[in-house]
Image (cartoon, rainbow, N blue to C red; front, side, top):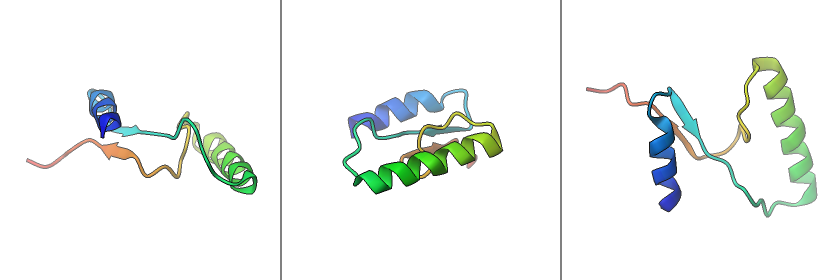
Length: 64
């Protein structure tokens, strides 16, 4: 829950804030495939998102 506060702070002035896991506890093959996938996305879309598949994304609200 405390990490949500960081995302809420990061979203100010941005369209989206994306979190990532600092310490991953995945099997080595998962770490490898994630690294390759993230590098491909980084090159294709010129982005610096650390973990494209991370579930901690906070889009800017456009409602209301």
